[in-house]
Length: 301
Image (cartoon, rainbow, N blue to C red):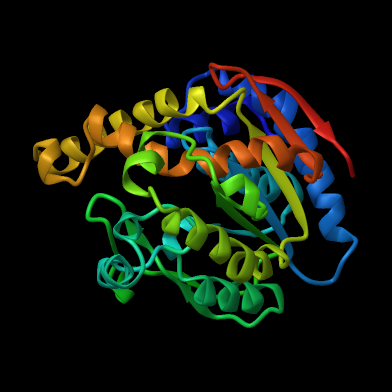
């Protein structure tokens, strides 16, 4: 059991409010007990998938679980983000030319290097370390140079991978016919983009998701919350980067409200599909309210 002093130090380090301590005590410590028990039942690293829409708190939860597993169970963790496997600008520009202009924007299935992600997750799962994990710089919208990649020296006990579309299945053909928002209606009139994204999700993402041993989902009440949550996320990033660099937001690759609205629309289709289908498939469902407070955690395993 972590002491109040240890928890406060963790909160300070990650700039979390004091109210987060209650979530740790009430929800996340019992969850890590289950995860630790699951790890002890097998001889190789446990791969935990963490799904949640933009701004739902995936990164914070992944860091919290890794810390609790280390502090309470002496289990080492490696935390990965599907975001760090985004294709480079040059690769996305080629997709823009070859397939559809909307693929120049990072985010949807088809804009990640799933081959690299699958290879590295396989190596982690089978203890083939050391290895290096890519890092994506969202302010520059570009993959960081190789010397800045995350180096994993020894095989961890736990691998936590988080991503907004992690575990989501492809839609059927009929679901792709009607556009879900203005972006699809005006910029994907013939459906080429959404069909391509759906095909990529089916063919190249499901093999990656199959490497996951257990899934956790942060379930938003609806897609309507996503814009506000993501706006708050962007403002925090804006403040931090401006403090670090003393530059204006437009020089940091950050989005204003209008740009963010368009950006979020590209996630709407699969976010809504995931909210409708994934809760029945995950082992640990964390139900959130509109303020990202936890209503309940439902365990199916």
